[in-house]
Image 1 (cartoon, rainbow, N blue to C red):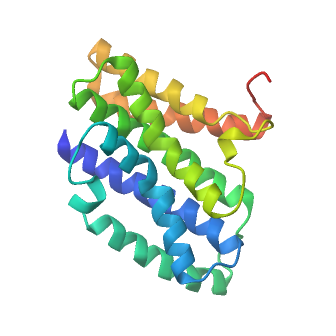
Image 2: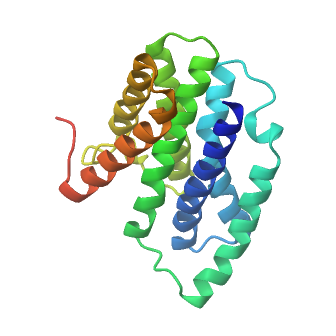
Length: 202
């Protein structure tokens, strides 16, 4: 189980780091700014989760390869941007952000269950892990956090539904499918919300 969580964390780290890097590069931040935004985007939610679950050391301190990997991605982004290999647009952010949302939701739920939390609290751990980093990213970039904007398409809701999918799989005994189901539901809902402008009632 721990090995699986580590693999998921690496994938989610890369996905959210790319999201943070693209956001920072679109605002012409320097290397320190890009790394800071990527770091907060990726580790903000997991750090809050670890504080709430009283897990020490924080997962990115225990696995220093994660912040090192992010530094490499941040440095590499400058060469990618100069080579014009990718368009740094809102659409470019959506795909890595959607899959990062799903992957980190799965990680958060798994750690909540590992800590013997009630199922609803485990679901909230997934939501916190997946969404708090994005909120901090938007604040650093001088924006109203995406999840608080009135016109925002579904975001946190996607993570919560994905977390429920994870819990349902574990309840039915399909633990091996829980991560795939959670990630798939969350990412599909998020991309669908962006595509079809799904929002909560105001």
